[in-house]
Length: 249
Image 1 (cartoon, helix red, strand yellow):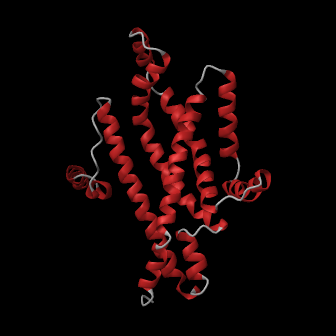
Image 2 (image 1 turned 180 degrees about the vertical axis):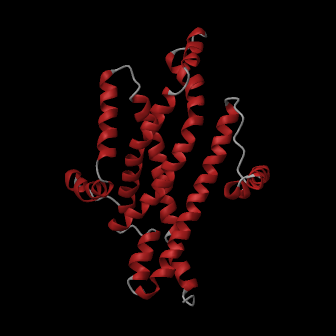
């Protein structure tokens, strides 16, 4: 069963750079669109709020697969130019997840206490200065955990690019390996699961670092990284207390 393992790994790893590129590109676009859309929904101008809301509802309320087909097959007919599959995939990932991220930004900004806004007014800061110096730094701390989840979902969503022949990890598994070695499906897809898991862990590690940095910049106590023992079984003190309560019972 494992005789073909080196060949499988080599083939799947050939798709990792494409998956990483699609994910990084999608994250970059999604981050920009999240802040643009989220802040636009808080604008005092009705037209700006309306445009942002239309963007969010269209991209959040329609199928990601249909969006991918529309950008890749329909848009070239309208503009008269073919679109590179990877570029189409990155654009869809960024715009789709940017719509979800816009709601994260909007909610995080609104969660900043009103007293902070009033403090900025008392310091004679302009609305833009209050947003940049007072509100956004504090809101950023609240944004990072949901953005972590969003970026992991984006990573997993990159597997959809296989349907427009982007040679990422899933394409390599489905079209290159399983098509000719269907009997090795268990090993092939187990390796795919592990590769996505590793990439998701890397995203989480990066976002945890950003969360600690963001908390430190606004004077909050950075969250301590949880050890493997604490994540699995709790701290030693918690386990001791639990054992004592069991004895007393």
